[in-house]
Length: 504
Figure 1 (tube, rainbow, N blue to C red):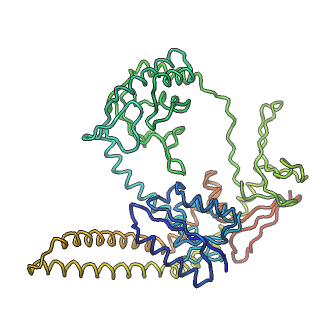
Figure 2 (figure 1 turned 120 degrees about the horizontal axis):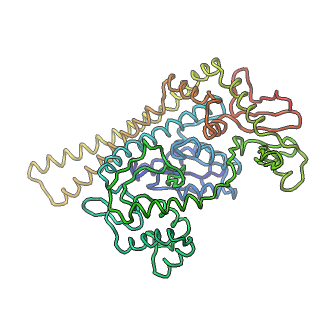
Figure 3 (figure 1 turned 120 degrees about the vertical axis):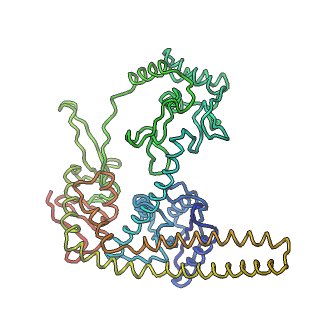
């Protein structure tokens, strides 16, 4: 029998323990029917799929490299990941280990409608997740306009008033904040400041010793001048805030005097001017290689990796290319590199012409819609089952109310009534969520076409968007001595799976 691993997850905001049991039950039934032997079950509880901060999930990815199983079974695709980039990345990680991902209630195969429907479903789930985040952001912005703490650890130097939820000064830590700013303004470096703080016994809010990064971030934090700031930094893919970047001014909420000041504006400006002068400006330009992980050498089969060279004798001209990794590291291949711009433009133009023409998109939309209808039936069955269970609970509650009305009250009834009411609320919540997923899993033809068209305008996409699209549609790109071959993940009418027309 084929060895399989099962992965199950529920979000604390929207699902309960019962959903884990239901996922395991359905996966086991599928495994038995299709002759899979489940060797391990991975479960993440109360974790969000918007990030990869899921210990059991990451352990599963790690175990896949050890050959412990050949297949990963999930209840639905949104249990695996809720954004297309993470899904594509981790599916590729599994594929490197020859491990297949199977959604037991969304049995997608290698047909074109299957592959693109998978992308559509992941995109819809990503939209659902972002919509929830947007709704949560509304409440956080209301708190921000009132200068209230919005969760997380308050900045070093501040505490949160338990009643008003506003910032108050931590007098002990505030002394260290003043010391840090004054020492830096007087010309002291990070090492001297850290040594002084350690000698005085100061620790960060997390109980750790201060480091250069924590000192840098503290010196850049304008809150110490009494300015309340919310939503300054965007979130990274993993859900953490990227402190090195800033949102646009219209997205940032700043309120002067919104919190108590620890340092004055004069000291703040002096420190910022000094930091700006000391800032290293000679960083190398960041080059995004769009085909990383997809492009391979036609001679030895090894991966081709991005390579950036700067020619000082040509006014610092930068030449970017993809070179065979075997040639660069082991010197076992003599394949010539290929210019980055040449191969990337070829892939973009080929996909635009072969995949994203109007005729192919129309045919594909019809196929995807028909396919999606078949995949949606299980959600309707889920709704029926939950509604049946809800009806039973309502009957139990009504019987108990009637018994109490007839004078048959017992102290244990109150506890049982509370349990039933809580269970009823949970099931109603699950039914509402399932109905939302039902609407998402069966998109209209217009939604499907709009989604594909959104991917089709390749020449106006950002590098990050192009990388996602390539992961969806391209299996691999093989660079031969005289031509480039693109192997698609999907088959299209009149297109086949391979594109091989460019002469180098």
